[in-house]
Length: 371
Image (tube, rainbow, N blue to C red):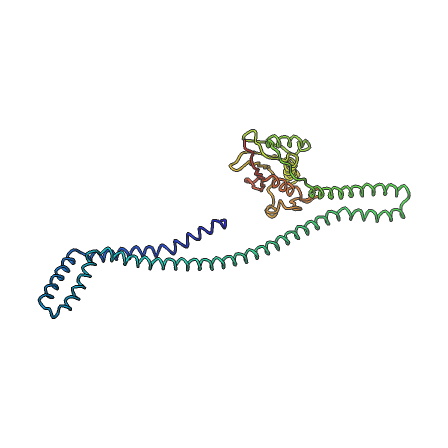
């Protein structure tokens, strides 16, 4: 909630909490006071006071010696009769005093509530600032540890991939010295040619490894444009003829044309990586891929499933991290799904692994283009 909305809400809350009890008490006291005054002031009392006034006048004339006393009593009765003749003046005077009293009480309660709320708000703000600072430090530490873990994983991967071809190259070079001393010239030349071919093969693998890491590091920024997702998927399938013997594709789309914002080149690379990932996970069989596209309430869904083996449960939570692979091999660097996720995220979408029954499936969500 924004600060500009919190302040008025807090002020209203303080006013209601302070004012409601006092206003209720004021209403009840006023009602009780009116009832009491109404019961006390009545016409019979006025008539009784009138008779008392007449009696005092008469007594004053009959007993001149006590006239001063009767006069004082008469004045008191007349004053009381004046009050009982117009009780609204008394009511108004008492009620005004009552309102003033409760008004002062309400003001004091509001000031006290504001002071308490201010102190509590400052304390809460200090605690919140302390917690935010602590969380920020912990987040920075976690980020640093995650980055260090990623670099360690990268260093381990690079060391492994570079060491693999260097070891046989070292052995081959060492064997050349022995072959030169122990073999005839024709045999040595044949051995040299064989060594050259083997070293060339290992160097080619080393170069391919470096190129794959370089490709991952230099993925271009997406250039989005309106495109038909269904057409892009069908074109990518047609552009992979080398997979005909190993893969079968079943494509379903509803509707037949779905517009999205795409960088067609990069997105086709992401689709190709998903297909190759499915084939690498099932190296000894033909794989059927079921690709469906549909509109959803908040965008477009692209499902890429196959009838192969499920991803190992121990790897599934980290399967989109770089250098994580379920299959070992020279060509499996664990970068394919990391590239797919990066491309999807830069399209403003999301990707997650959602097995359907006994079969693996990847679900990509993309923002739709209004038609």
